[in-house]
Length: 157
Image 1: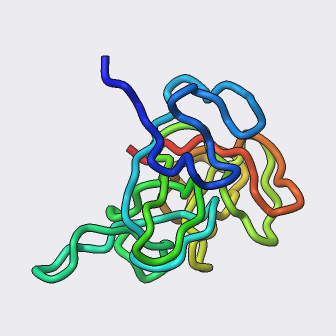
Image 2: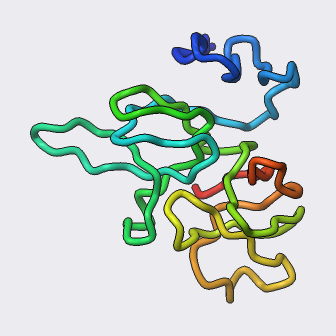
């Protein structure tokens, strides 16, 4: 079994993936997957992120997803904040806190790409997933907090 380490543990308030605990001392939910990437630009915690296609002079990196970005490049939700060139932890599957801005999220809402960079748009679960405009990226597990972060289960893949 592979030992998970958190290269970002030196940052205050980040989750300790070695012990499996959040900054609040709660257990990380089973099935949650966190990956480490290099930030291409500043990324705020809770923002939807996508790959920046590598070139001969720039390696693979991630950035906050903009509405013009290609949907298949969307990979997850930032679990930490980072500046350009810094490592950022990204939830690629499972429980995370997703930024919804001024929108209202409720348990059971689908999460789709928003037209605002990095935001997820909550869509009523009463609407059949087949008629939701946009790609469903997961489901909200509750209401947002004072920082406009809502519990979310990311399940893009």
